[in-house]
Length: 291
Image (cartoon, rainbow, N blue to C red; front, side):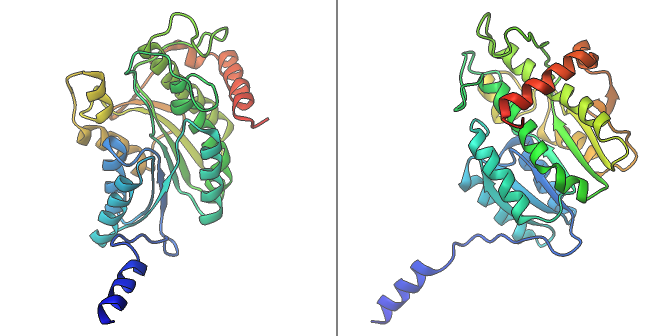
């Protein structure tokens, strides 16, 4: 009988991991794609500074392992949410859940992404070119959904993890049905992030919300780079240090593109084309159902 009761208790007991909500006044930071690579390391560092980290990814086991590590560290706190950015339905549910669960959002790090490998044209659940949706349209939608929290939490900031890899947008073939390559698709999606960054910085000027785009480092030793078959040229630590500069600094002017630790010009001139940016914004609002 005693053994049966014990077995029942064990079945009903919560899992070994724990997660917790932020305390009053605790900074809240959402890092998308934080179950591996750069996002994981940045989430770990942000929590070590005492913040509450919203961990996001597709792999629940890896996400909860990171949350458990953070909770056991005794510094910050964390909570995990699963969402696949290849599905707008999941992005919307994710955004709505964050709005419901959190009354503040100090920093949004749009880090989740899909690399240039494999070199084949893939489609998202919504029928869009896969990299364009995962790397750009999904962050565009999520950022717009979470804007009320960012505006309520000023001074706040948005950091878009972009790349020096950059391909201009052909507005006659945004989904790259012709002359496709994984590198071109990846470059277009990351270039679109930079265009979004510049647009948002102008739109949000004077609100207390600052916006940045960052190429953290070249070919970091991450799962994305290993899938590409590329020999790593930088460490995740180097990329995380560059990203953390934008997380922590209070003296960097909004609307800048950073290559590592230094601000500079975006790699593609189209990012400074106001007409092209307006076209991209209108297209993005249409494709994501925001208008």
